[in-house]
Image (cartoon, rainbow, N blue to C red; front, side, top):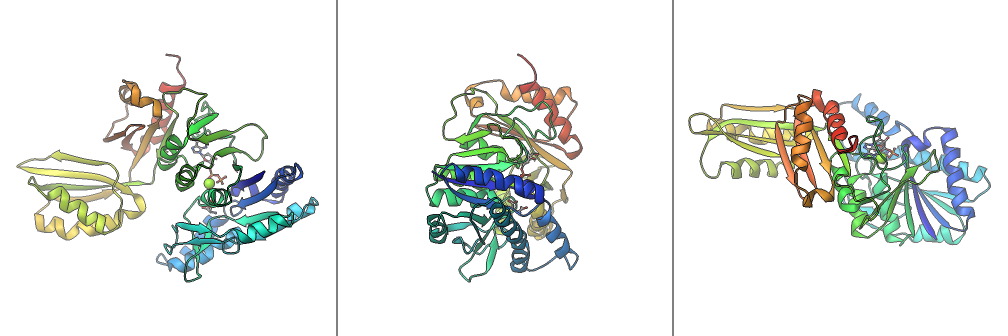
Amino acid sequence: MLVVQKFGGSSVRDTERLLNVARIVTDTYKQGNEVVVVVSAQGDTTDDLIAKAKELGKKNSKREMDMLMAAGEQISIALLAMAIESLGCPATSLLGWQAGFVTNSTYGAARIKRVNAERIRTELDKNRIVVVAGFQGLNRNEDVTTLGRGGSDTSAVAIAASMHADLCQIYTDVEGVYTADPRKIPNARKLSEITYGEMLELASLGAQVLNNRSVEMAQKYNVELEVLSSLNRVPGTRVMEVAKMEKMLIKGVAKDTSVGRVMVVGLPDEPGIAFKVFSLVARAHVNVDIILQSVGRDGTKDITFTVPAEDGADAVEALKDFCERMGAKDLRYDTECAKVSIVGAGMETHEGVAAKMFEALADADINIEMISTSEIKISVLIALADADRAVAAVHKAFFETND
Ligand code: ADP
Ligand code: ASP
Ligand code: MG
């Protein structure tokens, strides 16, 4: 079998952990498998590199930021290859470009166009374990790019897809995908299976255990994923097209605190206003999430919407002139909010799910400021200060009671 195994930053954070990973990899190899390993930077290396750059200023070149961030993975691939060799197995480390990762040029959030895996194949044919740097590639100008935070998951899935691997295992510091972040909710349950659709929602709504692009790509190329612990050798969670074992209504609760809210108060209540507002925001390349339009006083209306926190300033800038021209009373922005969501394909065919979520929040005395729903999720926007309590209350209502 051809197996792709990915290890995150905490799984390779020091020599002891590197040797632990090397043991998992060499065990798989010794069972007669071809093994491609994808690794992240050690521990907090990526954060530390970003902090160093910030000491030099806030507006650093995106190209240089990618050059800098990619350095973290270069260290871990070399060390892991050495750890594997120390256990008596042959290993070769490859940077993203050596492994054939071709991306577009969006520095800091590059998209993988293809993986030209010939070099990986050649090394495997020489019976070597191949250790690939996650999170990085090369654009058409032959400049180094990175895929966005948590991008090593996507690197692993991309290799699995392009080489038609039999298995893609994502090893991390928890035992799988849980009904909520197990570090925050002690009673969270490990799921044995979850569908791509549900996992994609959970990942996009804040469950960082898998990067959402990796799930998107896994679904597109039908790469079955297994999320499991690098520390305890127990079964993890399988992410696949159809999950059959657990017929659960709701699969999980997620929290996203990296949201910001733009409020435009006192716009004229006439046709075309929402169109204009959101065209301007779109032109600034800002993605809008939840939208609320409400009737204000004296024939005016208010429009409130959420955006990724890092885009808040751009959204406000895009609307300033327009608001002035239209005589809007106020243009406000704040990040004192959080989005809490429940996800599950089962809710489509069951009534009362929303009511149950809202009841749990009401009982915890948490005010809902905005709501958005789709077939398989319900999200609410609440005050940032209430976020952890809200996750706990909602999780309790769905997973910790017997009715
Ligand atoms: P890695 O470094 O291995 O990529 P990450 O830190 O990116 O690991 O992701 C693993 C973390 O995701 C866990 O430590 C856990 O705190 C967090 N997490 C958030 N939501 C969930 C969830 N629903 N299930 C499992 N882990 C979750
Ligand atoms: N090292 C990168 C990060 O910290 C990529 C990854 O861990 O997946 O975001
Ligand atoms: Mg991760």
